[in-house]
Length: 477
Image (tube, helix red, strand yellow):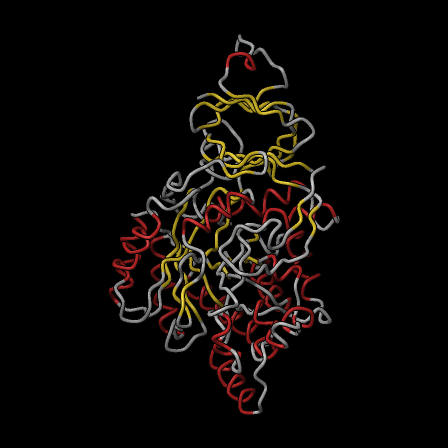
């Protein structure tokens, strides 16, 4: 099958230009001047499908490098399966996800990796790769890191919080980073001081402060900034590259920026919730149905930060200046009924997570509309840099000959209303983005040359998505 996308403005990180995009099978084969006959034929008359993108942007498919489909957490499971989650991703213009293989203490790392393949194989509407969580770093874990790199899993996540569940001590972190410095892996870090948080949570509950608002106040920015600094020092000691996930505090950004200014390979990701939402407005929300438990809808870790302290504005600034390199979602959805409700009367038992995989591209495009970021930077932080950071660039993250034909036709004159009953295909009983209005619209989505979203309909199929065997990072300084 040959497809020609005509009349649009192709946007890559390096700039924009009017161009027609020729797709043959699963690959982009040419970018041509509009109406060009350089190939000796009238392409529009010779291809199987013509997509008219006049007045629209033609951009590489989004890459969400931080998702948790079907993740076991807090006595339940993330409510999106690989099928529902990747279908929702497709609706929102995301054509590749990188999900986390979960290993709890005493579980075999390679067995868990095999289990995640079983969950995802034949169940994804878009392409997918894996990161590996390491919860207890020991000799077998370090050996597994080498084996997984051969499997295309080239990034490994550690936690400085969640004692008894995920937390690694500094010695374990050191050993994993030493291995990464040797084999080229990217170390990913959940940077919060878990011991401090645990004490603050106990004190809050003892004082009768049980509502979701206190999830935010017991995970203060100091705990994030301190852990970020400590992770950076350990990475510096070992020479390992470090990627700090879901950065939410401006003081943590400052630690990353200082390390980068020294020439260290330190990188940071933020998420839409830390750009738009806040401690006061969301975690402190009330409703007739839920009372002050309404805030449970937005319980995630790291937590939403105070708008009065200016964290949200600083995140946008850091994206402009490349102190933060990309935007993922940390998509880990839970329903209010029977899931978030587990924390009624005790905020520490609320499953941590927000569902955003469907809305990331739109929410970040709104930043273009409001002048927060440029059009090219939108493409860079949602597609190009995730591809480079995690060893997929050339296949993913660019519209160029030889790349997978993962393409989004985005209409800047369109409009998207987010909310249950409007734009909401994730397997959740509420939307964390209820009422958000976007001055743009995902018009057509192609995954490896196949149209999977068109005319406000999902026309793809579960099982189309393939595993992406990733290379080592392509983003080191």
